[in-house]
Length: 283
Length: 305
Image 1 (cartoon, rainbow over the protein chains, first blue to last red):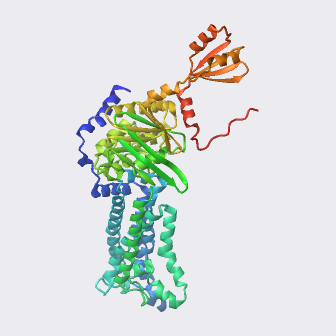
Image 2: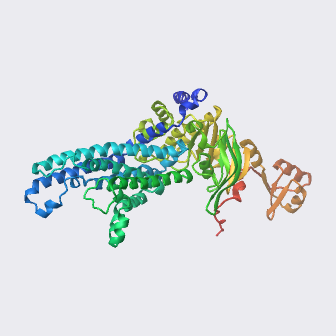
Image 3: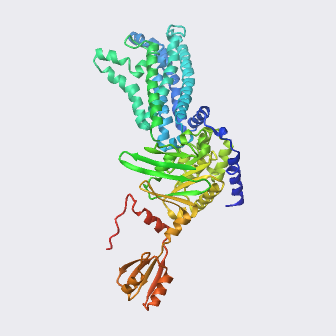
């Protein structure tokens, strides 16, 4: 080995052993959060899915508001009666929840597909701080982006609708709760998807289960005989959670906050299950 | 320092590790040898807490790895399988690990320099060769300036330059007083790098000896002898410490005597000798003999056509 390489070696490895201060290199929850934040930022897939989530609500909402305002005079009375100035411009949340769910799954199950999880858990052998860090980073990011985006979409679309005087206002009862509910609902979706990803540990499988729970289950349940369906439907995760938004809701759904709490409980069950398995299973 | 006590790991009905007890001392390079499937990787995964032992325990620097507060400073590990996400750059991969322990970006850059990856620091690791991946893994293992290093088959995929570099690195790390535990399935590689050997087969310890001791034991030499009076010579040589096998008419295989001793004895008794060939067992052969019985999958002996 050359003298230069030896010098590098001495600088990097040798002198640290006697002086290194163990406390200085301690793993803390804050440090693990910084690590997870860096990990999320440094994968292209995170940027793509997050961009899709951010764009889908205003993209779809503003398009709907614009075209409705534009066509309003030519629309049939029945179509006009069907139009919901709050719910329709917010319908982009359906696409946003898929993007959020996929990213949540990728953040944890994606580590299992390449083996990164072994490096991660090798650095943080207590394991649970990794799960808490991923939850913190991703739910914070989701809330911090989706809430402003939902509020922005509301105001822009209402302004477009006001050309035809068919807008609603922020002060109208339950409107503010519904719009803020979009951000809250998607934040819980973020937590749920991380829980599912950690339990299933396989990207395709976890995305499949996520889509099944959020989108397919309500469709299947709606095919049940009505007496059963009415009883079961409202308790399904996405139906319960979306009660908070109460767009086009009917009296068969749970009350907004009760529904939201039920949805939160589903996420808590998934996260507790994930934590238990993460501690117990071989990585 | 690594201390394993009666370590057992079962995967269903399959016993991967079957009661390992050993100790790896600081200041030396300890080779962990065994055929493929002997349980080396499983043992290493248990040391760093990735797999939980079915029973028994293993401690690193005095406690279970999971209980260390500064784990990267205690143990640096390079495990056999890749442990990266392909879309991330080499530097960001190391930075992500460094941040969990408050290790600076400057140290990450120094380590990239040390392992010779500075020029590809901002390249995605998905495009790395096996050898570059190993170097990145070694940089990750050294991040926290660990007292104990655990490296699973580190020379895998390295070119001759890289192998030399790794040997040099391991010896140097041990000289600084660190515990260095390196697995390999190649005896020849370990003979050059290690001071001490722990040989396992089918999840059990077969030998726990210094390399010198192993070499001495291994050189229980065989001598091939060809003589027209082979039978007479056989009776003359055979004794409590001497083994003589008549391998063919007129041919003997003698162990326990040197070729000098055999030649002298034959001369004393006026027995003609046509060939006298000492054969030193190589380390690789000694290792094969040692682990022969424990091979999980053995190819059937070749049948001469």
